[in-house]
Picture (cartoon, rainbow, N blue to C red):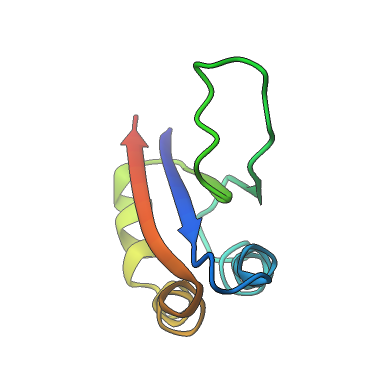
Length: 99
């Protein structure tokens, strides 16, 4: 298994940015071939100080292996998501990949 986790910070000047980002994730990413698991959602608040609450949206994708994730990165729908959604509503993203 190969997990690809992306944490997104949306543009605070765009009040609907988190919803637009989630809609874009669902539209462009969830049906890309090779995915074993897709989950995208908004940050959930916590009383625990160890929980990062500075971001707005997270994406968790699981692939069978790194090669499949590498193919996902150049898939036309992923590229379209980056251009049409991510670049328009986000100010930062951090990626955590692990196997």
